[in-house]
Length: 123
Image 1 (cartoon, rainbow, N blue to C red):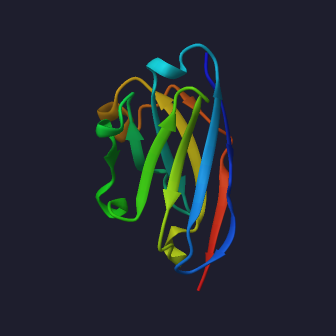
Image 2 (image 1 turned 135 degrees about the vertical axis):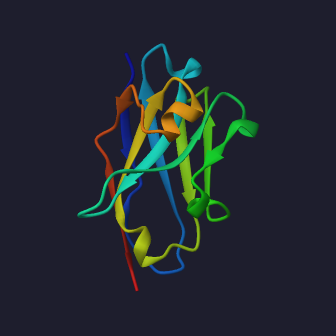
C-alpha cells in the first residue's frame, strides 16, 4: 500500500517555474515507479513523466521534454516535478502516481493516485 500527497501547486505567471512535491508513505516506495499526470478541465488525464529508482530512468511525454524534470529522493520518500517556462496550457490538476513499470504507467496503468494539486498559469 502506498499513499501519496502532493503539494506545491499554485497560481503563477507565464514563464515562471514551479516545483511540485509528492510525499509517499508505505514500504513499497523504493520499489515503485513514480510518476506525474495532469488533467485540464474537459480533457482526459495525460501522462507527464515517470521514473524508476535511478535518475537515468526518467521517461517523459514528448510535449514535456526540455521543460519538465522528474526526480526522486528515496531517503525522503518524495518525488518531485520541476516545471520551467510554464505556459497557460500547462494549467491543470497535477497528480502523483505510483505504478509497476514506466511503460505501463505511460499507458495509464497506475496502482496508486494522489489527490492532485492545482497549477494555474496566467498569461
